Image (tube, rainbow, N blue to C red; front, side, top):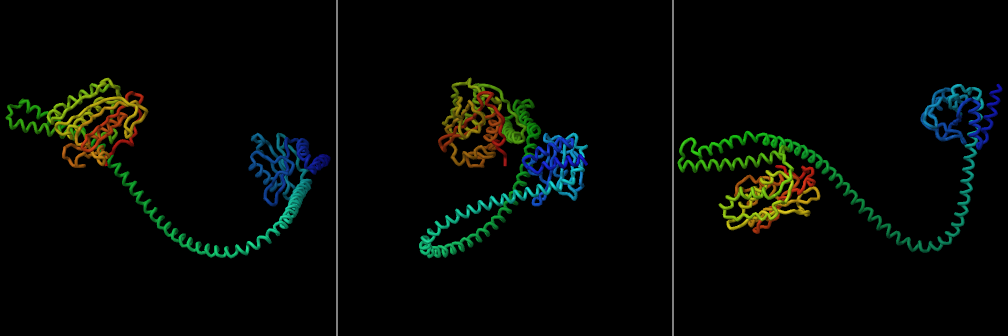
Length: 488
């Protein structure tokens, strides 16, 4: 009984909101705990809130709410709750008879705290807290009433001032009323027009939605078709790339037997037979060139064609290419000049592929240049390449140019000259022979080496093809596969 009286005396200290926190600490020590909180129900919010004047911030609020509600339902409970540092601490709680106010103590001694003697005074504390909330509410309402009265006084003075102005405005209002009626009629007319337009727009929106659905369906079909086409194209490229040996072997065999017959190893050959042998060899070489072009392009598409990135100089590769086409130029009476004045100009690339590109460009040049014309090969280094060259890095770049005085290319044809199976003269005609793959493969090879192949041409004034290659190893970067041409 003495403990209950002492506890009741400590509870009495809760009547003063200013000393409530100290009273809670004193009561907690009296009970052997570290901390004490009292929760009272808030009828408006439907939750238990810490009493006014006590700590309002709780770590792990959800765990506290569940613990308090369990104490209110069961009358008393024990457990663990998150402390201010987040670590769990022992807790014990009790509720007023029939629920209502809940008292919770925490700390190492909380589990042994005797809270039963405090239950009779909890309803008193609950009534005290409710009274404080009502007093606070009354004070808030009183302050609101005072503020409202002051606003009313200000409003009254304002109304007095407005009254005079309103009398002045009445005359103006009468004049404006007529104008307002006219504007109202106009607004009504505009509203009707807007409603009509809105109805029309709604119909158009419905049509647009239907079109969008149709477009989405067609887009999906197109994506499926493109995926199927890509799959078929890869299958085709893989097939052609793997057929290199099977296609080249019989052609090389025909060329070999033609050489044996021409050497008369199997016996003498008549002039007529030798003419047929020459035709067989020429046709076989032409067929081998066509097969090589198609297989090279197929290997590029299949990702099976690799190139070297080795430092070299342009002099020797230009001399080799010029020597290989010398007879062809002499036969067509076209002058071929090696105007490369700096043969030591460096580049990084695959020497065999560079020679292949130069041979293709020189063969095309003599093919489309009339007798008496000329073709020049030039070389140089620059940091400002052709703006249309798809180059990565800042250079410098080595440029090999093949310029002719031939028939030239019209602006309409320049855009398509690097497309597969397209020739300059007559579009997709075959007036000059060949597959129309030479320039396509040449540009592919140039880009695989980290460079590009560009064209500058004018109809009836000749053409100039420029092969761009890195001048040093640092300029060679990853190849952007998006710039590689695909066969449709």
